[in-house]
Length: 258
Image (cartoon, rainbow, N blue to C red; front, side):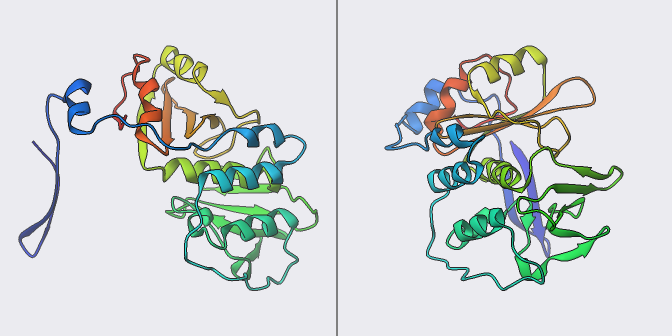
């Protein structure tokens, strides 16, 4: 049956079709036979999060985000000294443009701007809903989020940890395979998170102050509490096969690519 459609000058240019009822997994497996990946990003980076967050960032990025032939070159100098966490991040991003963000974006240093009594704006939500800022007075700066309707709030992690959380979120959002549910009940959330490894830091502040990450080899999941008492869940995976165990948990996914 038709899903979404677009027209240009009265001509149909795009249509998304859905099959109802959904095809059984057994039938889908005949069309797209199950296959195992040759390798998966591992979780070794987790062991460095407390003592060496920049090492954790480097290991995560090198495992999850492949280099491309595109070369962003060296970033133009900013009016301020670039803190070490940024320098490490931008070196990793030189041949990985997606690391700077596809859902949300980090600005190159020459476009940083001073706002809010000396705080430097360095990143933005994709629709302009918030700005990220940092305090340039520290080598591992505090990070603040300036979100419409909430004012300035400090992130729980300094820059070295924030950049890892940013990389996790962007890698998850842009993964080729997903599992989604915007209003998952608590018992299903408990079932899901028990099957994964929690990222052991306090919540990230986007989409709200409850955002937590969970991982498995080749899998990143994010949970965010909703006002109605349920939880929004997004899972990103590098390969279809690593989602299959989550399909056996009895969770009523809205979208499931496994």
